[in-house]
Amino acid sequence: MAKGAGLTLDRLFYQTLLRKPNEFLTEGQRKITYKELFEDSVRLANGLSSCDLSGKRIAVLDWNSIEYAIALYGIPFAGSSIHPINVRLPLEQISRTIKTARDEALIVSKDFLPIAEKLAEAGLLSKKKIFTINVSSDDFSRFEDLIDDGEEVFTPKFDEDTEMSILFTSGTTGMPKAVSYTHRKTVTAIWAILTSLSAYQGLARLNSGDTVFPLIPFYHIWSWGSLFISTMIGTKYILGGKFDPISTLKLIKSEKATWMNMVPTMLYALLANDNESVLSGMKILIGGSPIPNGLVEEARKRKIELTSIYGFTDGLIASIGTINEAYGKIEDERKYEISTKYSTPSPLAELKIVKADGAPPEIFFRSPWLPDGYVSDETETKNAYVEGWFRPGDSGHIDEMGNLCIDDRVKDLIKSGGEFIPSSTLESYISGVPGVEMVAVVPRKDDKWVERPVAFVKSNKDFDNLVRNIKDLFDSLVKSGKISSWWIPDEFYRIDNMPLTGTGKIDKKELRKLLGGE
Image (cartoon, rainbow, N blue to C red):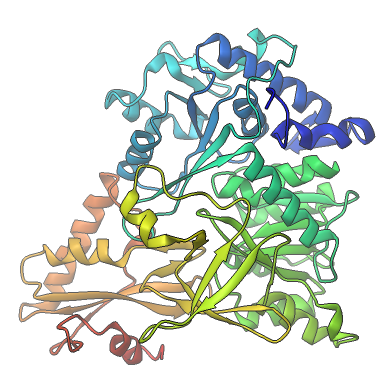
């Protein structure tokens, strides 16, 4: 296929450049039109090519910003692949993702310069291939120079089968795993999301007249593809930077936002500070973790429309809350239940439930945009990608209307605020503290964060002193970048008899019962 042909990312601009070229993206007092976004993306692509970075993988460390938006297009326009780095990962895991991706350059904002400096010191990246955003440095190059020096002529060096991005999971089983997405897979997935949100009945429908304000960061599946979707239909688009509930509410009011995406903990924070009913009438796509009933009811009372989304880094979009026409006329409360507790497979996607002997019913997913597997990880690929289907690791069921309902995680992972905490990593560290005989970290339900970790420790030593030693260890691990501070368990409980399964493993189900979780 000829370069620039097929389903490529630049085609998302076509209708908007015809219909609404002067609609804009805004970041504080700064604005950029879609026409300017396309032109700057082309210049960035040419600037990268002149630095011999065409066809390479390039990482980005930043909050949602205009520069990040340009990079999301400009890097793929160079025939290169963008690696959005999860800024919440510990330094050690960030380093591993860069090694796995074999990144050859980094675009970084001021907030993350200390990380860039450590990556350069470790020899992972050349200082001259680190491009700083709105910061001058004797050691690093400038991002703005790439755009200023780039030519304006768009000469595609890619086709629909060219990789446009490499993404990493959030490390649910210890270390993040990498997946690769081509232009074709990405554009097809974006079309599926937009179709689900605009062509079918449901809450939080999206159209070109909306003002989109995503709270999901670009490092999480490109903000669930929100910029790509908005580009395709030409919505006004707000870039809010690092999430803060007070400043977010001010932006919602001043920019007249009408449609947002977020995880439940973000909505909790906004509701707690929304004294002026700014959120009334808002349309919100919400996901990342189960949506508590209390949150749904509070949203309904405030006339906030909620629709759930189910997806994952390993396979992008799987399903979105829509209301089947077969329901007919239904009450408002029932609409919210269907839109938040259930979801319908996205167009072209399939979901099925597989029931193996002795195992919970497990969700399987496949679609045209599903990757072939993990990058450089045959073992994990064989476990997760089975005969063209992907196993997300969730248990659930499908009702008579074809709606998916997720019941639980298959594995014992702790999902706090939309992010996973690997309990085995915490257990490994705690078990190394003198005096610890056995340890298990399990989730405890939390109204705000959905789940928070707590630790059960078997020991015959002075327990108060032991806990102090464990906390001191965690403090040092946070400082060294090995774990994030929010991974630390909220409570430590002494247990004299650790419950075990018939095979000698710790029975975490029994521990959850002690917490009232089951």
